Amino acid sequence: MKQFKIGHYTNLRQGTGCTVILCPEGIKASACARGISPGTREFALLSPFRKVEEIHGLLLTGGSAFGLDAAAGVMRYLRETGKGYATPFGKIPIVPAAVIFDLLVIDSGVFPTAENAYDACRTAQSNNEAQGTVGAGTGATVGKWAGHEHLMKGGIGQARLNIDKVWVHSLAVVNPVGDIIDEKGTVLAGARQNGNFLAEKDPRLRWKLSRGNFDQNTVLVAVMTNASLSKQQLFYLSERAHNGIVRSVVPAHTSFDGDIVFSMATGETNVTIDFITEMTVETVRQSIVQSVLHATSIGGIRALDTK
Image (cartoon, rainbow, N blue to C red):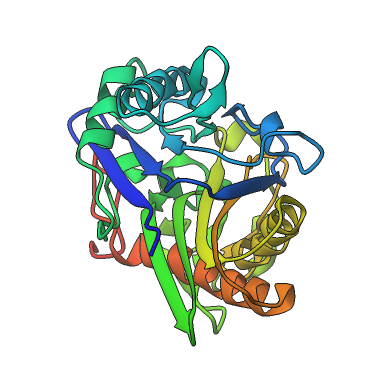
């Protein structure tokens, strides 16, 4: 069985970090961005209209655009371990990357480096179930639609579904402008004042978005599955997976969010596209919820487990 490995670099003192997903040989991948201002590297290669189908690693990182430099550390690790796209002159690792904006948390002058990402690769494990204030979710926050003074802690969440021989595993870095809700629509984490969620009595308050109230925001999702899918199907899967964001974040996909879903498949099990997309939507929803359930406070920012 082919396995993905997950590794994290976490800097609690300065409020940032990165997460690396190392891919097994021969996977296919694609992605879909629905955010207005995503921060990415090598993203164009994932279009279903581009030649390259396989990636070798994925970097999700804090640090805004500065954090994209950390992908060099993943490339170095993969080159040293003999992974990459074969050319007549050697293997070239394909490592897409995407960032969240976490500069507001503690120290805006610190962001993950190539060495940090390299270390995350060295410690990556197939059974890494870390969630909450870890890796790329270290400086993630939620509920910024009412301003920084009302936000709460976001983070990393993971969820997995197994049905018959098919499995889907979603990892989400949750840093949206919106609130996080459960399957009943109840607010779990978001804009809060004096212990109460601001939108509970009047959800329309969320409509009054103003650029003066908050900075850039993003939900990044990595979907991994053993399904046998073409690159075109993986793009469709990524599109549909955004429904999991819509079901757990309110408002979602605003003009202040840079949401992206990456989808990767090992190709080991045949399944219909509609079956796998429904599994995926649910794991994405669950992973976003798990991110705030496991988050812990940092830099004075309240988490769900704090009053």
